Every structure is written in C-alpha cells, then in structure tokens.
Image (cartoon, rainbow, N blue to C red):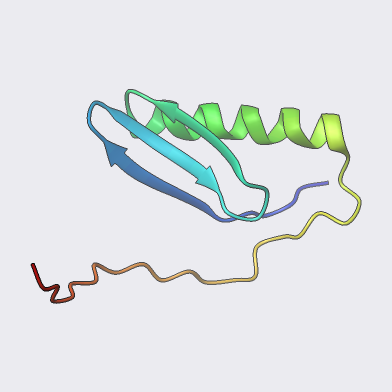
Length: 73
C-alpha cells in the first residue's frame, strides 16, 4: 500500500529543508535529492511509529508562488 503526501522543499543557507505538510515531519539534506530521500525515510519511520490509521493524504494539486507585499518601515 502507498499513500500520497505533500512535500515542500526550501533552501536555507547551505541546506535544503523538506517538510511533509500533512504530517508535520521535517528533514534536510545538502542536495535536493538527499533532502527528498531523508524526508521519505523520516515519513516512513513516523508511519511505523504512529500507524496509518486516520492519517490524512494529500488533498491534490499544490500551487506555490512568490508573494511580494509592501511593508512600511
């Protein structure tokens, strides 16, 4: 059985930080590929520890975009 989740990757200094939105699981890596691999392992460990019952799956398409707003000093 497989489940689908939403993962977000951000670049923070020298690390790529990955976050599984539905579970709140976070991991990191020096490359995008390493960060993805590490998040997959972390999510698998999370599911082994807490089970898969009542775990939400991805709700579908996710759209991210840069948002720029004016701020006063």
